[in-house]
Each structure stands twice: as C-alpha cells, then as structure tokens.
Image 1: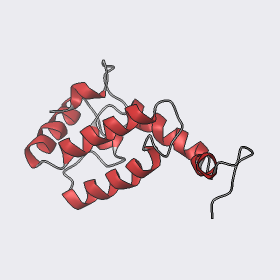
Image 2: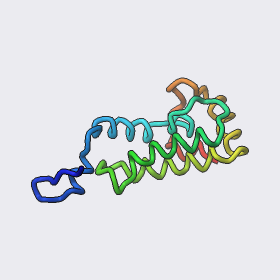
Image 3: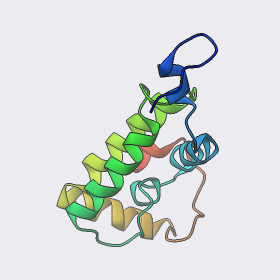
Image 4: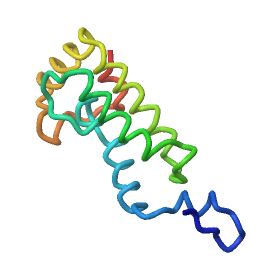
Length: 121
C-alpha cells in the first residue's frame, strides 16, 4: 500500500514512511556508538551469532541508504556492517568485548575517540 507523493513517486512516500523520527534516532545511536555492541543495541557481553545477526538485520533494514534519505544513512550502514563482521567472529568479538570493558563501556559512556572504527578488529 504505497501512497504517491505530490510528484507521483511512490518511492518518495516509502522513504518517508511512519517512523522517520525513530529512523533519525536509530542513525544517531549508530553513528554515536563507541563499540560494536552498543552500535547493534546489544549489551556489552558475550553474544551468540543468531542474536548479533537478528539485531544487524533489523537495524540494517532501517538505515539502508536505498530506503533512508538521511544524509548519514550510508555511514550508519557501513558502521553496522563493520560491527556485524566483528561480533559474528568469535575471536574478534572477544577482542571487542575486552576493549569495551577496558574502556569502561557497558554504560553509554566511554573515552572520546576518533570514531567507532578504532574499536573494531
């Protein structure tokens, strides 16, 4: 049930579907995350691959650049992909967990840094 926008484009209407305000909040959370756990909305603890996959898929659908007009969608999508790659690999997940704990993560705080990519193996 796509509605056409004033220019007749069903795609434009789909991109501004209900939940746009939460989409911006999702992107803000992703871009502002300090570790892959927080980025995927997961607790900072050992996490099984199906849980990581489920969280990744849910978020990736929301912020995929083809479905989201936010200027930061592509950046958020790339960060999600990196986080998924890290947490779906047992040894990388262990390193990320140790790094997050060492830096006092678990809450939403952490040391300021040059970006999320520094936290990925």
